[in-house]
Length: 130
Image (cartoon, rainbow, N blue to C red):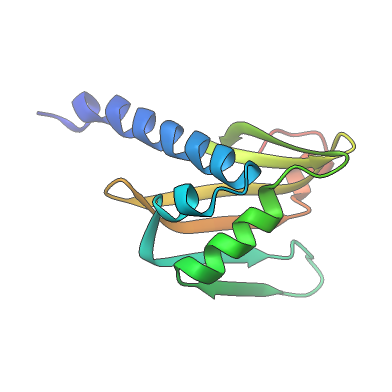
């Protein structure tokens, strides 16, 4: 079996997992969200400020689920859409129609092992799709 034979299945799995992440976080379903996360999960948040490097890492299911629930839950004017990020299934968070974050995920097996969050994504501010 060649790589191209199983690649569509990987993309489908990633797309389903990203959709489940969005639904669980939006509904504040901590049990559902935790079931998607690898026990060693890391959430890497890049503040997206080119003039100063600001990266924070949150580790572990408890802290990651709290952060993701807060970041992705429905609030006035906020929308979370499933969109490609770096040519992979991901999420784009917008407030009042303006993109505020791009989120990509890495999987280990069927579990989310790393969530990459880029705040104020530069390409989106200039109208180019992430």
